[in-house]
Image 1 (cartoon, helix red, strand yellow):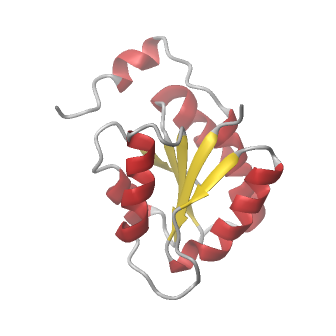
Image 2 (cartoon, one colour):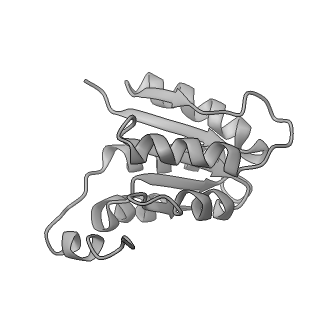
Length: 145
């Protein structure tokens, strides 16, 4: 069974979102699109919160959020307990976010990287596992309860 991936964006990330959905489906992942459905101007929290909630409640295993800088969607997603959203602009950062931080949402800055790099970042993120071990102790100290 393939991993279930939640994805959402704002208007700045809409084109990348559409391309990433197709790319990930071709790789065999099940992708749930939380919108938007076009490139009209929208408010990123309207899409970041549903993606984060679906990951938080284990409806999807991982999430991908795309906006211009990735900051807005990352800030929004990280308001959810159990979400560790990481802004990634390099494949290596994407891998480390999964391996060392058990990040469960990758936030991609569409205005600062090209689509090919966005695809590589997303693929790395969804195919990399958390290493656990010494990193688990640190990750377990993140949440505010």
